[in-house]
Length: 216
Image (tube, rainbow, N blue to C red; front, side, top):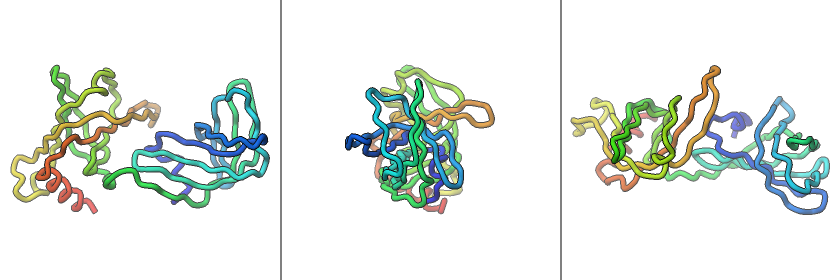
């Protein structure tokens, strides 16, 4: 895969896995601070009893995204400890191995959606992407954590002209929150919310599958 996966908006976690100078294998959650054509700099919270990895030692980077896990081998050039964090300097990844976690690939498409809960609260948005397993959407507005624990009823509007024998153009299914990811675009903070479908009926699955195939 391309090295710019490290800047992908779908990233949820990045881990650096290495063996320190005492021979102990470590797995550190890191964030990308800087990347050029030759090197990457990752920052992590200062761990207890930190022992630096040896210079020029081999390491692995695991990048978790909403679609799966990207893995690659790198070389640790150096690691510098400060009071607040550790900065790992590693070689730029050249190739990636990908492990897909979804049962189907997401397609980028903008469609109107509504998610309604039992107490009457409703989320209105437009999809960012869509698959047979669920969807995601961006929103500048946050909502109570209670709606991240209970399921709601999702209404997805599919263009009537796209699907034969689907006159009302609405797909209705139970849905539930999976995860969220905040990011800043043009100085405005938005959150990407990911929801999964619950008990998608076979008829609705067929309609959705036919629609997604038209997006290829």
